[in-house]
Image 1 (cartoon, rainbow, N blue to C red):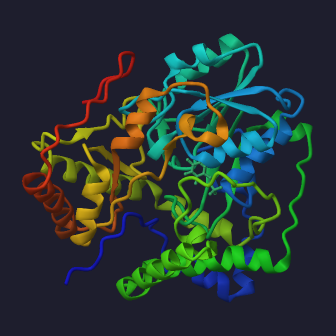
Image 2 (image 1 turned 90 degrees about the vertical axis):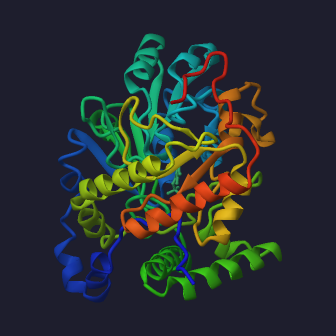
Length: 430
Ligand SMILES: *Cc1c(COP(=O)(O)O)cnc(C)c1O
């Protein structure tokens, strides 16, 4: 029996956190480690404010910009998105207006922004989806021309750079980063807002006050989940826990499954600023340790992606992304287009390969946002995108297992043609 290949691994090591949890002495030596010093090589000239989660960073940004972005104003964002982002905007009293994405990068299409603009538009939110850089020069030019603020969602994009080698999130009005357990850098949760000096200096941010129990549970459950996914016995621990969490969720108990497998859409979602622990001192050295290995991590992920791609290059049902079209992707997540991703994911599960579908949605079609826009590329992406494992812990044998399983599926199971992904206006897929 093969071990199950998980879809995600953040490359966190036990040595990144065990010494910190154990000894208050080593924690104290890290108290003076600032976010700015940890990120100095990547995000110079920014104020970096640690936050309880990535979504808190968007909330904090809206608080800092409340003179310029007011309830009733409109925000343009990509249709293919994380529904929480649109929900947070909504909760702040803003109206999300969806614009379509480029099928081959999964990111907001700069050419679609202008037609989504009205007299009430104040802000554009661009997501570097899957760690693929969006076309920042073009998007920034539109924002500058129309006098709009630009905010970047870099939750997937630590280590992703623009064509000139700049870390994304380094040059706009604000950017969020997330260090949750499903992200490329994992500090048991936490996030960060990157803003220009003048914005951070102008205002104080509201503090967050979770109860001691909430704070403990919010870090503790993520630490436990991260620890078990790293152990060599994860087949005997993670898989049963996942089964238990799914069974509990079916019976209406969502707590465990919300931590382990974040929902793809929850129409009743409300952001609660006090629900999570503030960024803790011990998370900073954890972050620093992982950033020190980040470039090697990304090189390894890109090599895994490339090897799977080469092994499957002649499978006609697969359409490949152009992840590096606007810069250098960190390969945080590896997406491919196939005719029926659900069917393929179920087949792969039977072969011990975890692939996911539907992590992100065409939010322009989610009823809770009453989106008026039509985003055909985002819709096709939602329908056809599959996420394969691409973490650096995968060796040659596992890369073969993943590639062989995908090939076998198409050899024996799928009579469907490759998806057509080019909308009349869309970018072309390779
Ligand atoms: C995870 C994620 C976020 C927010 O991160 P949290 O830390 O979970 O709040 C934002 N955008 C995208 C695309 C994400 O995947």
